[in-house]
Length: 236
Ligand code: NAP
Image 1: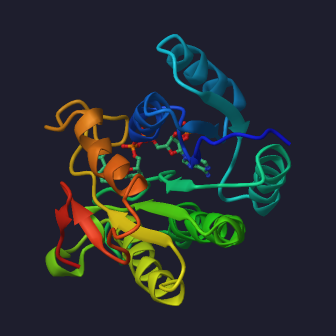
Image 2 (image 1 turned 180 degrees about the vertical axis):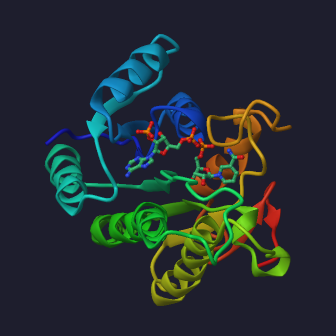
């Protein structure tokens, strides 16, 4: 086991986009950041390019839809550090852009929920005990404005329902762990220029990651169980 006073962060789906930018910013804050990706080649290329900028980074393969892969990461982290301070559930897919709920193939709905919702749920379940052990934890669930009931319209039901479920899960978990020094929040990055957001999105990766970093580094009197966009509460 490596002994360190530094915080340990895990970021899922971090070989590109908002996840990669989150790793950049966390590692530059002196946090040991475990960059994970489902494809090892993509992940190793990503970490090689980030490492040139400095920062404390490690790579581990992780497919959030694979329970064995999630358990393998937990074993790695508990053997190497015996602690996990920060978990960013960022991995996500958007497979039903604009598709009507009446035409949505069941397979697409299931795959989307498996990654976007069950993936985050599994990660929380695996890593929460380590946080409870050290009496500290910050969990950030990367959701979307499309998961908000307040503005929900037709189309893209798989994606929207997966993020709605993620938001609900955040509230439920926050209440169940309210006596621990573990803050769990959900957030919307806005429309961001990534492979998912496309080149026409108005926001940069840094803007998309800003609220993630803020929530990942909340002080002990910080909020828990909230849904945020641009560091302010968003409508559920
Ligand atoms: P992105 O560029 O498409 O990146 C998504 C990441 O998730 C990729 O690294 C992808 O890996 C990974 N991923 C997918 N399935 C996975 C799995 N089973 N296990 C592990 N990793 C997996 O998208 P992004 O824009 O950065 O999105 C990041 C998060 O922000 C997502 O949760 C998304 O829903 C949310 N979001 C984005 C926007 C936006 O405008 N961009 C808006 C609202 C919310 P591969 O490279 O292997 O596919």
